[in-house]
Length: 114
Image 1 (cartoon, rainbow, N blue to C red):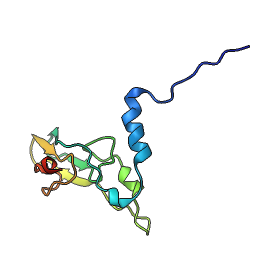
Image 2 (image 1 turned 45 degrees about the vertical axis):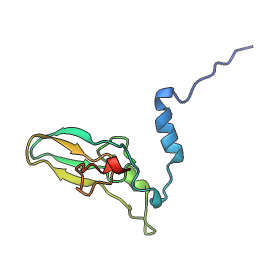
Image 3 (image 1 turned 90 degrees about the vertical axis):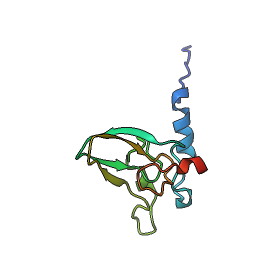
Image 4 (image 1 turned 60 degrees about the vertical axis):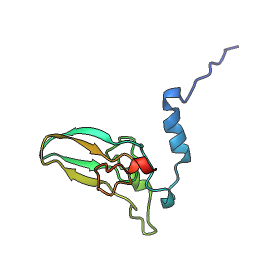
């Protein structure tokens, strides 16, 4: 009789992502999702465009991966969208991770009050 081997479908390294996926709903009252309680430091290049995730659901933080498209208005349009940032010089930028900055895509320290 052949023996069966069990296969683990979810590795420990994917556990956090799995929990996020299982608990995420398309209820817009959950937006924005706090992706991190710290800024993301990114070296940007002058003239290059960056698309910041405003919903917090992206797996490519702080940048958009299209996850916001799961959150729809009654007419089928996306509730949230990415926000473009165009670098004017080569610099290190602190992109907001908590999605509550009053300074657009840039961190203003709002994560300290969450």
